[in-house]
Image: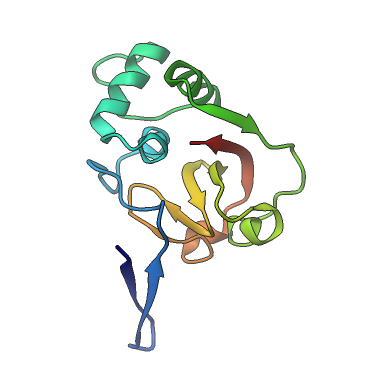
Length: 154
């Protein structure tokens, strides 16, 4: 099944692009809540965000009032706990997210990326986070600098 993303441009025209398989909205994701890390890992392992939040609470020791803010090391612990194979990519001049996939990404592979202070999942040039799937080179996130990249083998 192919779904389509429609975009309203500033000049009033509407464009459409098909969303590739393997990337999509995450069940239970809420825009505007600072829980991008759990949302990204929920997208990787295909579970609802609420379940992933509980995993983070258990593994990382967060309390019941924790709303989702995470550190890079938290994701490593959770990936190991879930038995997901992952590999950090070497630190090099990653540049901005909008150009990262063209320079370093490989089609068909899944990446957990920290761009600015935001964690996202990128696959085939598309990303997904709390706001749903969209092209990685679209919007203000495209100008964010990539600081950490993990290739996730699912």
